[in-house]
Image 1 (cartoon, rainbow, N blue to C red):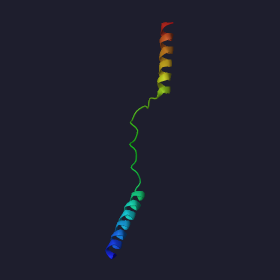
Image 2 (cartoon, rainbow, N blue to C red; image 1 turned 90 degrees about the horizontal axis):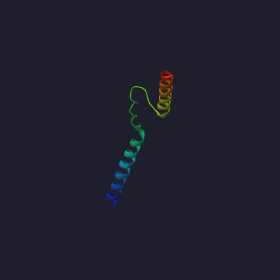
Image 3 (spheres, helix red, strand yellow; image 1 turned 60 degrees about the horizontal axis):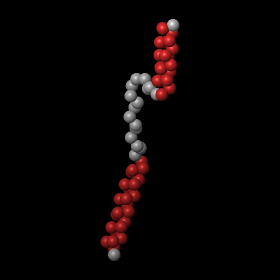
Image 4 (tube, rainbow, N blue to C red; image 1 turned 90 degrees about the vertical axis):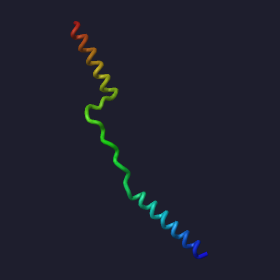
Length: 60
């Protein structure tokens, strides 16, 4: 009976230590964004409007 109590105690302590260290370590940082201009939908829309405006102005 004494061996069973000691085994349960050791397993409980090991589980407590492992779960405690898992919470202390912060998660890894995400990778940085790629260099250069970030092109989203709004930027593309402005580029298309400017392109159409420029083409119409040239052909007038």
